[in-house]
Length: 500
Image (cartoon, rainbow, N blue to C red; front, side, top):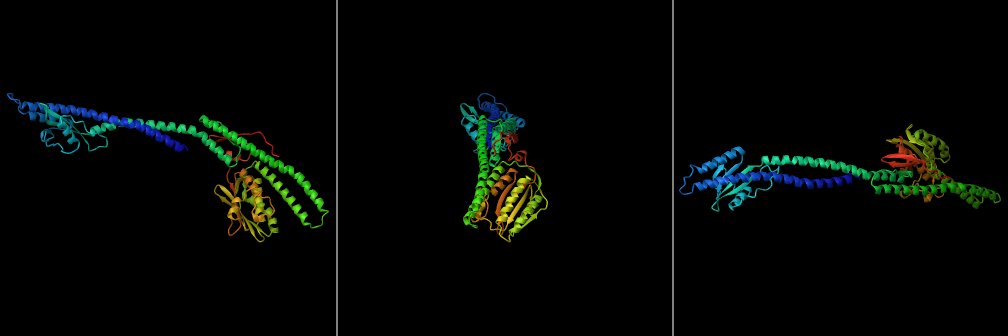
């Protein structure tokens, strides 16, 4: 966002500077050219006066004419050309030269600058001057014409044709300070815009980071007071108040679940005991008694899972360097007898030793739940393989079974609380096991994903970081409140809340 805002401000600033600089450069070029045109007009006026004098001396009766008046004019034009390098000439009305320098120069009879200037002079006016000469006009010349008038009639035209190289050089030299000034002003404006956008957007970035933390389950993230516009400061305070309110509500829900699960266990245990006592008076093998007993045990298991889920959400991850392969081997060893009783082959594959950054207790609990789930839905004679693979910055633990698996729709819902596939309703379980696994893993920066196994079955992939997370990530799942400010995490311990 900062780059887009900076680009917009830069374009606006560049437009303003160009709107000021272009007229200034144009005015400078026009002034420089006007100075040259005025100088040429003075020269043509002097030559017109000489041409008028020469023509007048040669036609006045009774007065001795100079030996060669046109020769004198020719000498003046020649010296002018030799000194300044400017072509000059006096032309009759039909365009025939009277005196020119250099010798042989003729007036171009075209519609260009020379033709227009000559036509204006024939009309008794000085030429208005050519169009603006720019530094890139390499082949342009500056043509100025003045009429030679005697007795109110135009008898000839004086024309000068100047090269524009020196003029273009002076214009370009005058533009350089303007260009340097615009560049310096642009750099200062961009620097100011950079600082301004940073000042405006810094609270937005901090707020975005805190929002992302909360969206990923880190409910303790907050925005620390900082700089920025007053409106964004108020937004940060409102955000913190909203986050506090949401966290309080979630804490109340978790506490209620934990308290309800804990408080219901005792009466449920007493109820199950009374059912057992009542069963002594019933005929042996009563189907109704067995159904009631099974439902009571299922309800007890659901309460236990609810309590485990509530405790997992409050679980403070004890992250440390852990030999993931050794931990997997240990859990497989514990579950191998269970697999043997069900006729399922349970084996380990992949790396024999690889370390990761995890909570050993939480990871062990997650592996127990995943392996138990795989053994539960793998038929007799099937196989469950747990593979440990180092994958760049993470370690992947893949548990693949050869059961029936899930279809695409069921695969999207797996892990939802209390959800179970329709064909698995008769299998023991509460539908909370994988939800507890997800909560335990998230507290330590690990993730869990599900995919189809080939040719059939389910693959569960647990990903664990190989290195210590950033300081603010390491505190995820703890009871410390994190305030995010300018890319840092400041922590503060909040008031304790009941956990049940």
